[in-house]
Length: 146
Image (cartoon, rainbow, N blue to C red; front, top):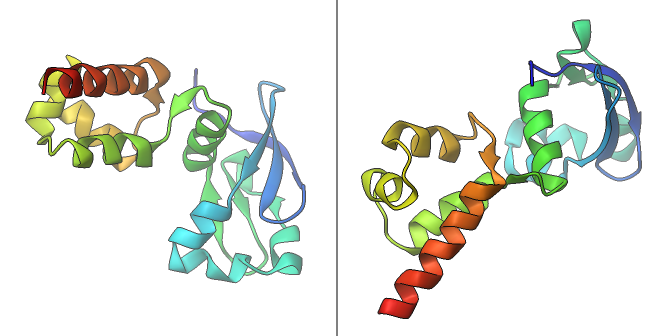
């Protein structure tokens, strides 16, 4: 898919927004974890402030009157993760940590490049659902062998 941009946004209660993408698809995206994890987003943990969300310039972000902005790359990743179309970054990072795998070892285990493991863990690319399933399968096989 080409880079997504937003045509409309509506506050859906709490820290949740309904985003309509240029493709016409609408996603309900919960931003509570993002707001909780990033100190710079703390002002959004206020109902009236969060509810004032608007579409940013040319649809490439969501913005709030306080000047806070969240880009479409992050919003698209969260939407795909929450819809079950992609593996959450934290799940992937936890798999690697739980199994004490270096970037190189994780890459070899999954049949991907070391660079891709790094990109996935940094949230730079969506982690395909099949990669998440491969992590689970690898873990089952290795615990069975142990």
